[in-house]
Image (cartoon, rainbow, N blue to C red; front, side, top):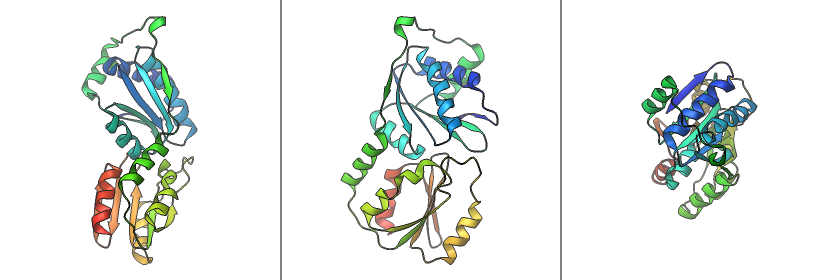
Length: 235
């Protein structure tokens, strides 16, 4: 769920939020981001706050949020994700948001001794490993062409590996993951999908959900595993 949104970049606020998250979480926390520079710096501020409490972080760097949710869930770890969509946003999973808000309000943070500052482990191959898990599990084939709206998110990194593995062609829209411009509205995508010769459509939303479109059917999924289970049946 979304725990933070600001139209301005405020690293001090993000560091305080990181301290609250680290205090609430302890253990190891998975952190990731989207493709904007502001998200990279925002994640750094969050990590500084988290490790100051003694909590450790696993930094998977640039990754689609929907993939990170599946990645962290499989490992039983909480996650924090920084992205930009009409402002700087922070998404969390595996935490009690009320607890984080209460810690922020009271400012009762855990302050680790310098010897106990949390470590950061870098895992830049998280998306590659996630896709390999997907490909080992699913081996069905899909014919035709998909219209895929990446909505300027890192979902563009799924391609071409995803469509090559499953055998379909793909046309990408809004594939500029470093852009701060808002993607074209859903109505534009749906009109193009309806007029074109597409077998199905995917629309990857910034909040870590994906819409599946086929004919009059529209379904939304918060997991790539759930999406692919449905695609196996529907296509």
